[in-house]
Length: 388
Image 1: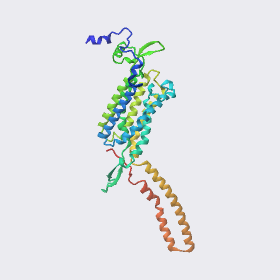
Image 2 (image 1 turned 120 degrees about the vertical axis):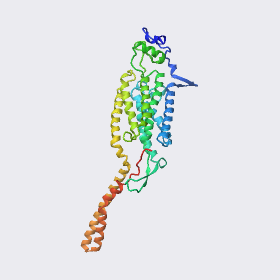
Image 3 (image 1 turned 180 degrees about the horizontal axis):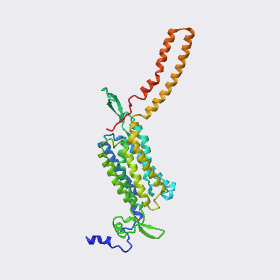
């Protein structure tokens, strides 16, 4: 045992890696003149694993149609890549923020915050449109008034269920993709001064020996990609697996998992960002991560207090009915004015019978507002949805 630990206990001279880093190590294999990098393969594997796990959760746990998610992936993957690339260029990487290198993906540079935000914006456009189609809805019988008389309504699936399934897998995909950063010798932290840790890195993670052109020497750097990746693995088990053990609707609402992911990742980046090397650190990332945490906590509270009540009322239906109310109320006022003129004419002609008919019609129209509001705003919401 002492022979095994000896290299880690006696390290009083500069340690160099067992395998010095070279640019060729970025390339996994080549097809003709086309070089396939480990960075690209890492993202490809992360997408495959992520899509597989999301489909399993939608199919086995949420019992939802996975075709909706397939179509989303076709659009969402390129949108996420472009969003990540856009945010990376905004931060000044790669090539010092040279926008002419935007489509040169071989240079690396992919900010996950930009990808997540881009995909989230797409989801809020895509899912409401697709899930409103009849083929993805179900009918349900409900007794809303507790009278024993059941009525049939359309059962619309919440888009948040799909987002929850996706959010729980993102940390694991993130961990897999981070190994592409290692092969590119990027996303490292400050200098490692502990000789024992340097000895460990020389055997386990030799590419963390980074050349410092200013000092003209090589330096061991903290494998920040690994720290963040392992934390994301913990997040994956908590969100994707552990969250499903919460069965009570008192502590679990549709959308909670998505919100918790943003809170988790925001806290993680706030911890990791100060540890990054200055070449990869950014104040904008700290601001965005703080927004993830702050808005996430607010949304989590609202999701259990306000949003859960709003789901019982269709906002689209509410606006539509209010517009109908304004339109019919305008017509109602015109009719009332017409009745007044007709009554004045009857008074002039002393036609009692016609005036009586006009007053009966006026009485019906005076109840217009109550009838419209009861029929439009307080009728059972046909867009109500539940977890199933």
